[in-house]
Length: 278
Length: 104
Image (cartoon, rainbow over all chains, first blue to last red):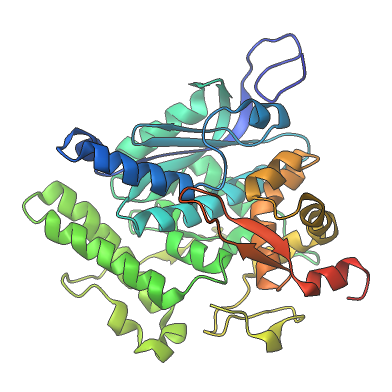
């Protein structure tokens, strides 16, 4: 038997240090139970499969070559990057953050807002069986800490990012500019719009911001009688408006950042960059 | 948004709307030779295909950010999937072909 990341040479399953991403999509459970479930499934299938860069599921080819295991269960998605050979933990976390930023942006503009966590710990994933403390922690962070539609970083994941290698000649970690912000509650989360704007030079900034604004406004309008859900999308509106201010300069040629703001709510939240405390 | 061609070949390529090449992507430029050759060999691979072909975990983890870096530097271009749920593919630009043949 070959030596696969999650299966030892003796055939025994094993836990491997991984950067693990776990998130769920708001509102999917309700869609699955509604009268339009068939239609929702078709839209969900198309959106998820187009947005995800890796094949979903445990295809034999992926297992044998060690590509990243990705599992979708109802509204929950798990992706793991095993930390093998000389791959640093900072690189693994950085990669997950950058990839989920692009994925989150794609999903958000299709009305699917994600909430979850990135953790760093032992994990096992083989033939649909997921196990390990990294997943337990991620599920717990998703439930108890993320609260709003944001993907938070566990303390170990954010520490790994900040301890990433410095460029030649010293200086700040190369990952201090990774798309991660710190929210007012001190919790780091993936700055998904900036991540997508940084990773994808072809992306049309004004178009994507307009699509994101429209998706958020639609949710705010639909959830007006459900404060719990409305407040989650209010957080996204705060984040959206903060991003518009960040991209003030490129938006000048498109009518200014004000034209892209969600003005149906009063926003005041401040987000800070992730920085190493001196 | 297209890359401002005047900024190609510099350390800080920019899009025509003024977005700048993220500095953290410089770290992935060391994979140029290996991954450009792989894209050429695999003929319009998807990200998944490139990951499956990666020789080790370190290279595999670098593929996604490297694709971003290479796009910013005008070395690869994407070919959008025609099928409804298909994956995006990548191919070399003439600039990358030139780089691979040693005329950088």
